[in-house]
Length: 104
Picture: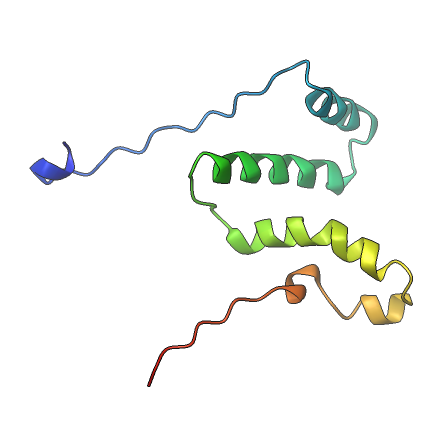
């Protein structure tokens, strides 16, 4: 209706609703208490929010950051047996790329 009258469509505030008794939520809550300075705890929060956002059809604010969060755990698993000197030269984001080709 807003568009029909040439008006800007208002952006609603997103609310992430969580089941407070779900094991994932209780686990994240405990992780925040026990590992206050661990950046991986906040990264898990980011990953959970991004996944929920995508599941409801929303758009990610920083798709590259989300891809990095998704790729990091598998990358760590795969690279676990390789020397640190090799793995430090690759970031998880470098494992994935999208290329578009347009006809000339």
